Image 1 (cartoon, one colour):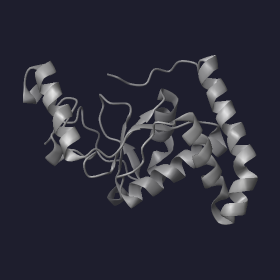
Image 2 (cartoon, one colour):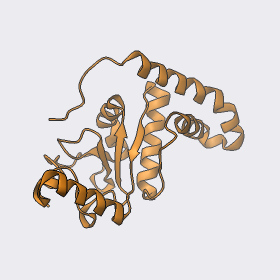
Image 3 (cartoon, one colour):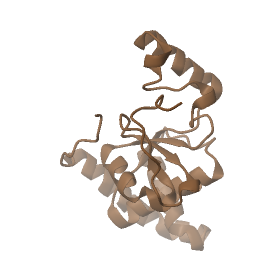
Image 4 (tube, one colour):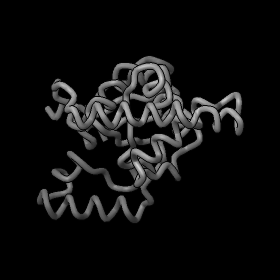
Length: 182
């Protein structure tokens, strides 16, 4: 259910990945001059900011931000794979609005919890949840994310990952949807 489809990369998506990697390579000398020990990470961050200009990484916990940065750096440099963030930290008011809208759309709080949790239960409000894109990036993260304590949590949300350092490489039991077992 809602699994990323195994489809070949569209030419446009492949082009975006190649252009982003080329930009990172071109930015590498400048990044090296600024931070020699972290040049690849810095150049990757700059290139990905150009590719995903609306991304907002603020509000993530330090651990979640470091894990996501390290994972997407490896994905780009070693595998030519882009991972963008569509949603990370959400303040409680935004999360409540999202939950209320889903209650109206779905017809009940129980139905809404299939997709959106109230603020007191949302890992987005705690700054440890990452909704990523594109499908290929989510697949990469599902395959390699445990190295960074990033795990896909819900069967029905291919895009949702959480930073769970307490798991230390052992994936947590996946739930069917956000409201399961709460």
